[in-house]
View 1 (tube, rainbow, N blue to C red):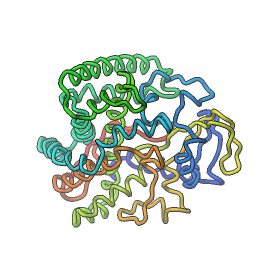
View 2: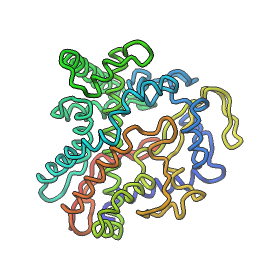
View 3: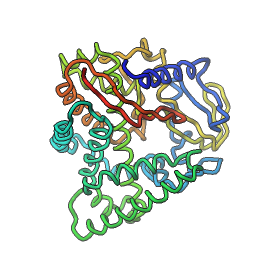
Length: 389
């Protein structure tokens, strides 16, 4: 393992899971003002039981929501049935197996083009982590891929505006600027689509009447923002994490190079071992309990996916990275009605990229440069360079 930053990430995930799973795996964490749940069974319940553990923070949080202006809170992942079902059906057609297969040639072309320009070390995030998912989501939405730098900047400013981070004046200013620019851009896109429909996701949303009336431009904007942000962040982080895992485990890398057909299994193990998100929030709709702990209405509950994925009651040798693990029922894409809509697309994007990297970087991999930032529920990799000695 060439870089101490990689060891820090692995150690943090491992220790967080071990500490979190101690005892009954449920505790109130005062600095977060939240109940934190670690065990697999309990996390799965929190993710699945939406009548009790709601995704709608604006409606159910008993505490003030400092990031209430974030458009993510108006998106699909932050509302519950029955409206959730109506809106999800609108965009689900963009993620059918047939629709995803149609995107594979352009994904392959993007990866090939980005790697063709590499000389020496690979800037994983700059060359692949940003352009691959952004261009894919742009194609899905029917917007201009050449606005990639703006999409990346808007995404990072909006996703960083949450919780206590939203009290930082610099993040507040960046969020307000990004949100205003993104909204102005998409309103122009909506006007162009109304004038010249193209049969894409945006046209579907603009014409939809899920409950007998048209969606407002704000609702369509929230949809587009969510697709852009989630499609970008999840795929970028998953790609970074698989590079980290394979660089740190040369025997697994050699197995994949000998049999590229094992790549999908390796992607699943990375999702379990080093998930794109450490945890996700829910809010209690009324009094309830978890593992015997009484919890009041309006409480924030953090379902720690990273710990659930390493629960020894479910996964044998959970602290070991084992591509080909079967079964591998990790919770990294969620569970129940909020299961990630773009999960299969992200899997395909990363698998295509990994196969190309196996060919482009023969031999063992090493990380020559890495920069990270700690978040309350994970470590975000801000910079990563890959070399093949």
